[in-house]
Image 1: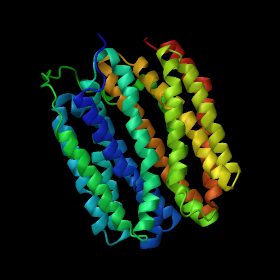
Image 2: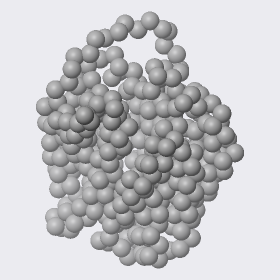
Image 3: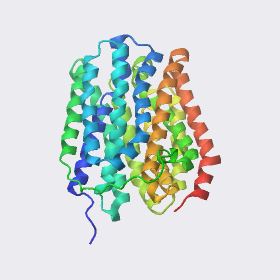
Image 4: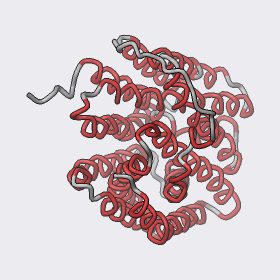
Length: 392
């Protein structure tokens, strides 16, 4: 008899993760507009103010796997989620750009740790026979929040006549709901195994996967540029004031479709095939966004990028897992997330500087160029290395 995938704990951690991510995606694309209109921030200053969040998550995530393996996972998850919920109040209290930047940067710490803890709990509560399938569905909770959050944010902002604080209050409410759901989890008590080995760098980052990590960094750099500046670019240059949320919806639809269609290839161990298809399709999407400055390209590009990323990201996650030993799976997952965070942070920062000095078009061409460099590196280094060094 087939084991049940959607057990009570799995439904709770899936829903809690969705709500936490939804509270995050509800405000992300509108923060550049908020900083510009509320504090008069310039493009490069916006990049600096927002990059701190990702940098903080980047610092915390390598430690996340170690912490959740050595302390009660539910306790770690709830502490992180409570801190994430509480720091939304800082956005409401911030009366200056410097204060907002401080709270935004601090907010990255509980988010980075929470994502590691939640994904680990999800693996714990899955039946071993359906773990791969369950992890794939768990990722959809992030994709759905990416689709719904930005889309609803635009309509909510209009309904409240441009009151950004209403969005912050709603984000607090959704994150608190996620906290409550996670608090109702019933996890088995784990026996703590004393640490015997000397702590080394390889406990926090999978050194064997540095080639794959560099490719992921290039791909997420491009996403960091596009996702952060798409709203303000659409408003200032294309006159799009109500459709930015649709941009992210189309991106998420592409992600979901390609995740579902690519699952079969991953089950058949055609990992490099999925990764190759994904990075190639995504590159075309970034080219379209940089090259064509019309509404149809504005909405067509995210769907294409989503299709590519939906194939690429699960394939690269499988690469990291297959390069690692059984006792390094947490490190492998943390390494993937850390690489992605590093690229997004660099994209946000570099994109802001490029937009301020040369304009948005230059920033988007930079996103395409870095993505192209990542694709070249993948074909020349990362893919051959994976095929020769994979353990299974």
